[in-house]
Length: 276
Image (cartoon, rainbow, N blue to C red; front, side, top):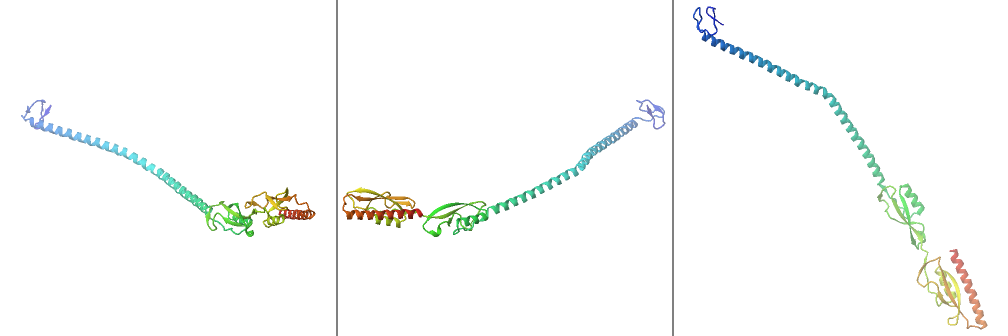
C-alpha cells in the first residue's frame, strides 16, 4: 500500500498516480527504495562494525590472556635462572680452589732439591736423604784408597738439581779392592817364593814332590798361573822339589834345616793371611 505524500490518501501498491490528487508515485518509490537501500546499508555497516568490534574485542581478550600468563611465569623463570647461575658460579669457584690446591701439591712434590752427599759416610748420606723425603739405593765400587772405603764417592742425581718426592738416589760407596795379581814364583827357592807371596798379601800352601831332575828345595809348580787377578782370600798351592840323589849327611842336614825354615815361613804366612 502506497500512501500519498500530498493528500495522505491510501493507494494500491502498483498505483503510479494518487487516485485522489493525481500525485505521481514513481519518483517517490525510487526515493523510498533508495532510502530503503541506504537504511539497509547503514544497518549492514552497523552490523559489520559491531561484528568487527566484537571480533577485535575477542581477539584482544584472547591476546591479553597469554600476556597475563607470561607475566605470571616471568618471576618463576627469573628465580630459577638466578639459582642456576649461582650454582654454576659456586661450582666454578670450587673447581678453581681444588685445582689450585692440587697444583700447589704437585709443585711441592716435584720441586725437591737433591742434597749433595758426596764425601759423607753411607749412614750419614741416607739420613740426609730421609730428611729430604728421598729414597736411596747403594752401589759398591772397588777402590784402592783406604780413605774412600765406606764413603759415598758418586751419586746419580747431581746435588742442587730438582726431583720429585720419593725419587731413588743411587749412592756409589767405595769398598776396598781385595784383588791381587799372582806373581811368578816357579824356579825360586822356597824362602824366596814365600817372601814374594807375603809381600803381595797372598795366602799359600806348600806341597813337596820327590824328583831327581829338579834342584832341591825349589818351586817347580804353582796352582794359580802368574798374572791372574784373584781375591786375597784365595789360597795358592806351591809345589817344592825334593831331590832324592842328595844322600850325604850335610845335604840331609841342610835339607832338614831348609824344610824346617820353609815350614815355619809357611805357617807364619798362613797365620798372617788368616788374621788379615
